[in-house]
Structures are given as C-alpha cells and as structure tokens.
Image (cartoon, rainbow, N blue to C red; front, side):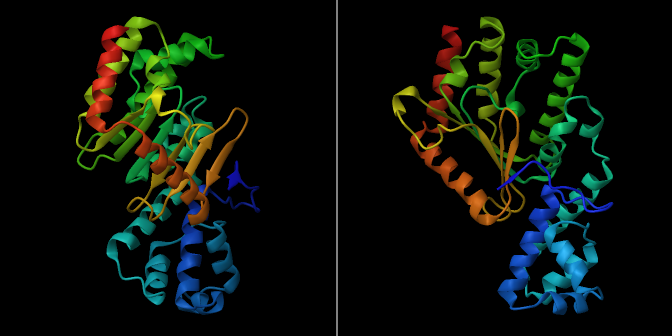
Length: 293
C-alpha cells in the first residue's frame, strides 16, 4: 500500500495510474522470463527508461505498450486495450487536464476521480453514507453544511462536481457499480427527514438499473470483516484484472496498487457482500426505511 503520492523525480511525477500500469508490465515481463535490457532493446530504449516505466516515473507511449505486450506473449486484445486506457489516462493526469483539477476542494481527489473516469467496474463499501455516485444534490448540500464549509457558493461547487462524477453511471457504456452499505447509512439523518426520504427513494430507483447493484448489510448481521472503514475498489479490465483499492482517512489516503494489496480489499468486499441482503431484499429494506422517515 502507498499513502499519498510519491515525491517527484525532477520534472517527472509517479502517479497511481502510472505505478499500476508499470507494475502490470513488470509482472508480464517477469512471467515471460524477459529482462529489462531485452525489453529496452525491443522498443529501442535504454534499460534505465524501462526501469522508470515500470516504476511509473515516465508516461508510456501506446506503440511501446503494444510492442512489449507482443514481446511478452500477451494476446488478449481486451486486456491490452485496458493497459492502453490506463496509459492514456495517466498521460492526461500528468498534464492536469481533467475537469476535477479546476474545481476547488476536488483537486485533492483528482487521482481518484481520474481513475473513476476510466474504470470499467467500481465496488464500494460504505458504513455511514450513501455512496457519492448515488447521492442526490440535496444530500450533498447537507453534507457540505455539516462539514467545515461555510460558503454557499463553495458548497454548490461541491454539488455540481459530485453530479458531474455521476455521469459515469450513464451513457452508452456506463460503469458497472456494486455498492454495499451498512444499514446505518440508510438511517443516518443527513439533511433531515425530507432530504433523507428523497435520497432513499433515489437510491432504490438507481438500484433497479441493470448495471447497478445495491446491497444492504443489516444490523442483525452482527460482526463482520469490514468494520474498519469505508473503501472503494476500481477495476480497469474485468473485476480482479487490474484492480486498485482506495480508502480515504481523516488525514491521509491509502492506495492499494498491487495485486496482493488490492486483493485484500476485494476479498473483504466479497465477504461483506455475502453477509448482506440480496439486491431485491435490499431494495425492500430501503423502501421500508424511506416510508418510516
């Protein structure tokens, strides 16, 4: 796991996306029994450059990725395209062209939002709040008011940026989304009864979409594996293929970039999902709580 960002090396910056991509290529090279010197010769580069590529310090060109994948014996076009998608977003991230970099108080989440923009599947575990991609505007406003935000205009920026992120749930190729919520997130009165009722109704409506799965972990489930805190797992090919785990704390964030680290998040998510209500039973509970607010 890595906390925060690594220090820049000269004018180069190692990003989470770059490190994840480099790590994947390094793993492919090792599996193929190739050395960095051999990989460098294949793309007409130096071993030092390949080392920096695999460490995420320099952006990668699409032709280099294609050549290296062929050299390593990788023939799955979907997997290769997932690496190309990571490389493209990593290049955009380094150029700071994402919309999130120009929004106050959202820039700090830029690395996460950048990956959210290109992810093919997102899993989230929440203990106290409805997931951001499923929040209503009034629910977001209520969260802003109860935090240290005091400027109404600034809160509206937060609202609009959250709604902009939710665009990932729509379009021709919406991101697959699986949310597991502790029952407390449904009963916590954010914004009062009216705001919460509208939020729960919206949550139930979204949960009926074919690419969105919502499960509720009821209080009666008792002790579970995910009591330590909320987290997200983002996938960039199929779930488990190129996963990155993300957990936000009070003063720091934790990135789980490697297969072993991200796998811990994935396994924890799967365990808590198995303890939770099935999707339809979860919708029934959400609607029952909504009627009682």
